[in-house]
Amino acid sequence: MGWHAVSKTGAIAGGGAGAVAAGMSLLEQGGNAADAAAATVLALNVTDHGQCSIGGEAPLIIFDAKSKETHVLCGQGAAPRSKEAIDWYMKHGIPPRHDIKIAPVPSVVDLCTTLLQRYGTKSFEQVVSPAIALLGSGTEVFKPKLAATLHRLIEAERSTTGSREAKLQAASDEFYGRKKTSGDVAADLEADYIEKGGFLRRSDLAAHKTRIEKPVTASYRGHTVCKCGPWTQGPSLLQALRLLEGFDLKAMGHLSPDYVHVVVESIKLAMADRDEYYGDPEFVHVPMAKLLSDEYTALRRPLIVMQQASMDARPGDPIKMAALKSGGQFRPGVGGTTTCVVADRWGNVVSVTPSANVEDLSGGRTGVSYSNRLVSLNTVPGHPNCIQPGKRPRITLTPTMVLKDHKPILAISVAGGDLQDQTTLNLLLNFIDFGMDPRSAVTAPRFATHHHQDSFNPSADRNKAFLKAGSLVINSTVGTNVREELSRRGHAVDVAPGPLANPVMLHIDHATRMLDAAGDPAAHRHAAGLAE
Image (cartoon, rainbow, N blue to C red; front, side, top):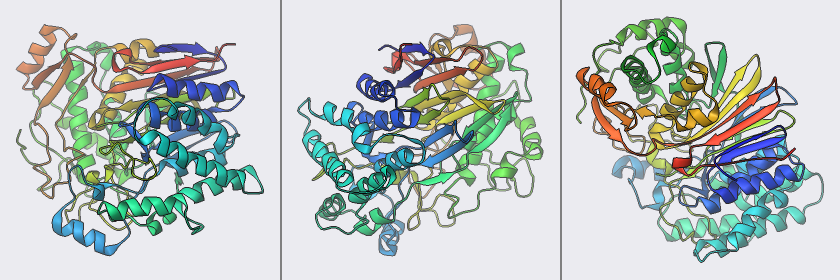
């Protein structure tokens, strides 16, 4: 166990070492990448508790070797379905922190059981056993309660007859109360919600189902980059890549002033569209095809001025095909997540980004600590991301899969809120444009911007949610002359001595059949590979 590993038969990179070991144990037992990913996600809820939780979320992308298709599993719970609850939010606002009213429906259990049903080979008991073992050590108050909850799910699976898939469904149904059995986990979760003043109810839990969706994709220099839909910030990475394809980044030089400048300016334009248009596509129309179109990209690219940093928020208008949206520009004033990527010997690849931003570590009756993800909605009537009954928040969690010649070659997962896709962009460009392997890509200096709205600020005044105009945060290992030139161009440069976000990356070399996994050691990421 370290921060880098190579193997021809299976590899994982992720957060806590114990969670990576949990996933590796499934690979060693003959399980596939789906089995190992489920085991890792469940164990991360122990090793990285606070950064993620069973009560949180875990968007996932999988390449299925059998069908040769890439799918998104929406591991994200929704807002309460009660109209009375939504009326309260619209009147009082979404509480910013420390209130169970900001909890969405827990999604992790159904994400794992759905993953195992559709793509895995193991039982829930087999994949959750390493997590239960981890819960046996330490004195944290949530641990014995969560262990008891997981044993209840195992018992539901054991007591059900029929197929493996039916047994997995029974474990999920026990958690979400779909069978309306007296004394199931859902009853205890509802009791906690009521006792603490939350709006979620058993009916919200029972209605939850993990959606399986097609990824949103874009081409970049012969690669197909796959992201979750606009219920995440993921497509903003694709928009930035489309803009950058019109520049010769390699000729500019890695981490040169021109390179850093053009990447940051592309991010600003992509994030402006994110903040203006993205939301749950089950509720609002997001003009995704037009946002990624050749015509719109060609209109937006000239907005990047090489010698001058932009200080404005500048969404475009993909409907009217205009570079700038009329009335949309303005001059603004000045958590926790973890990671997992897995590949197996059969060609299955998974990238998943578990999270929760846990605020109450006690876990209530069940040990299931709640998430704060409803703060990623807002209360602006008519806004694509305005809270509605049963609506998913537009989240920052954004796993990445990259294909070449219809085969997966990269899986990336990053923890870091609004920095996630910006860090992913750093890694992708390191790999595609500058030929770096995962070890070099995850440890190279990084840069990002806060020139966007804060995804964790639910304020009804979205201008006030904007973080910092002209921001450019860059690692201190980038030369002083580069930073001074970027300042001369108008960037508000801040130096970051430590890692910007927490990435893991896995490369599949189909010529050598080698799996190469790495996580940034400065960000306490871990990696392991099966011995041949």
